Amino acid sequence: MLALCSKTLRTLSILVVVGGCASTQHPNASAPAYTESSPEIAEQLAVEEPLQSTTLQVIDSSTPDIDAPAIQLTAHQSSLSIDNLPALEQLARDNNPRLTRLYHEYEAAVAKSQYADKMPDPRFGANVFGNPIQTASGSQRANMTFSQAIPWLARLRAEQQQAVLDAYAVHAELEAEALRVEATLRSQWYRLYVLDKQIEIAEANQQLLKSLIAVANAKIATGTASQGDVLLGTLELSKLEERLLSYRRQREGTVAEINRLVARSTETPVVSAESIEPQMPSIGSQQLAELAVQSQPEIQAARIRAQATRWGVEVARLKRRPEFMLSASYYPTDNNRPPSSIVTVGQDPWALGAQVSIPIWRDKYDAIENEAKWRHQAAHNSVDELVDRYEAVIVDLLAEARRSQETAELYHSTILPQARQTLNADQEAYSNGAVEFDRVIRDYRNLLTLEVGYHQAIGDEATAIAKLQQATGGNLPLSNK
Image (cartoon, rainbow, N blue to C red; front, side, top):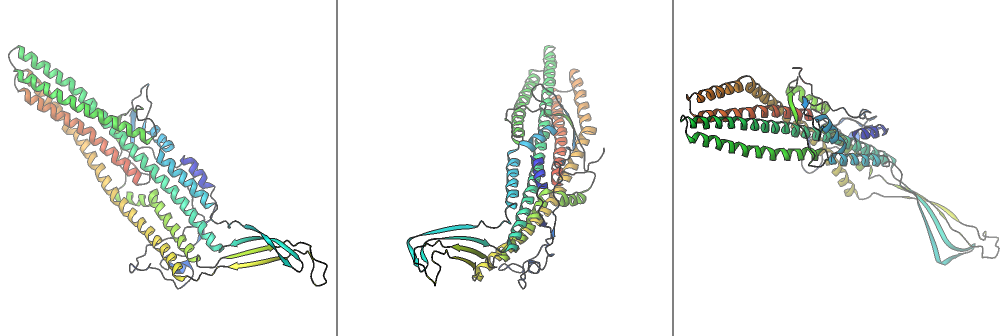
């Protein structure tokens, strides 16, 4: 779908305006902050650069490249599903309902740009007289009129430029939404990975608990343990089963969300990654923010919208200029008079005419122009708002990715090995009667929590990086660790 979208863009060979739009501050809330001393928009928008006609740089002819996910994946294979993240992303680009809707809106905007500068249709009219008009040359039974309205041609060109820019803005919004859908899909994919690891860990701990309960039963038989140890182990097993049920319910919801994003049946099985290895960005937050300002399609769309509203000011200004209409009339006349030396009997008269509108309602046209100028100002403000928002989001996401990375490394290198050693030592000590059973259960709980936390940290890091990719426009430099 995005490939078709880019192909359509290439065919749009219309000159548009790409003049810079500097942000302006209006002095009060009663009138737009523009001078009106000159009829030209370049002077009206005195704080901005003059309009210049140039060819708008369109999207590359190929399908927009969206960087491969910032995660190295090894996917499980199954006879029911051969899903992997790149395949799911491609399905989302092709089938996601919101992307499909935006693509159709883009095609509609392109179609509008192809007729925005066309002249109005000519009109043909005829009047048949119930009682013919009697003239010296004969009876006139009808008249026929052909007319053509001629609007101000500069206004038609300005409307076309605005329509073309609107089409480019919709295309940029389509790309921004594609990045957002992919970031959401990646987040759900990593969540599925975390849930599958949690289920795997819980099932492994079920076996551990059963072995501990077996040891407790053996010690009861020898009189070195009490029934309370078995009851404590059984209670922990029940709690673990409850946790497993919760994980499985969450997994079903996550699979349904993934399938919704790719427009498939919610019951279609999805196989998660066996392992993920997140790669951190190779540049800092300042460079990432600059990259977002340059490459984020949502910011680009807002800038193009600002340019389109600038042409809207020009359209509004030109509406106060008069419009013309040319007409030609023909009057069929009967040859029902005696011959005359004064008039030509039966000759069909014809006439040419011209009309012009008189834009005398100054207050109306002032209000139309002020409306366009305020829309232009608001479009500038939306660009500034987006830039500020993305800068803040990038700082927050980068901090989250670093925190998650440090947490995962700490779990992997220090906390988990120590927790496993503690559990193994206390298991052996319990077998020898050196420690109580509740201490072993406490060690087991700690290890379960830490193992879940380790994979959660990996998933959080991967999710933050996926959102960073979306924020920077899909072009995120990654480290080669």
